[in-house]
Image (cartoon, protein in one colour):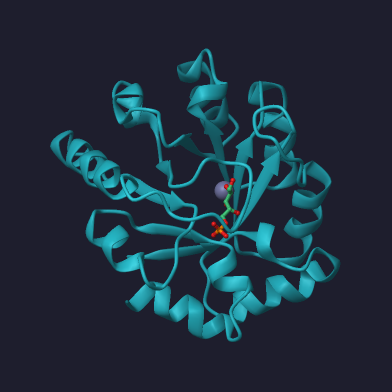
Length: 215
Ligand code: DX5
Ligand code: ZN
């Protein structure tokens, strides 16, 4: 099943609750929350209080993408704030195995994101512990960037790896996902699509979500 996780980074932050209603009515499955610290990525976005506030107004799965240095320091707080999925960047975790165990012990779904240049083999040994892998299809930090074409080969290689290991793991893709490239992304084996601009900048949010599912 294809799942859509609209990235709030492209929404109107002054009208957060209305934006959430739009994607709920549009049939989104998750809400993708991009947390940036100005260290791991050259941008600062939103954090724990916003996750807490969103938890009170929606029952959608809160898909929290931590683009932060030393995520271990904050995982517990994000869990308490109401995150359902906690995704850390592989490049930010020196002891990735420990970090994943920590997320699981808190009763949350664990995901790891890979920057475009990071090899999928960095996750080979921890894959059985993961609920989801996030393939970054842009360099993290900003919304509205163009999809990096080699990401499709990377998704295909990762799906081959999870299949050969007999794992039913979600593959999420984040960055530059549009109605024009979603078909090749899904065909390569991804089943969770993050989209910011393609959803929130669309005239009709519901139509955009439907097209990302069906195209
Ligand atoms: C980038 C973020 C993405 C971003 C996607 O660092 O992780 O979630 O908001 O935005 P679009 O879909 O506009 O590329
Ligand atoms: Zn993201």
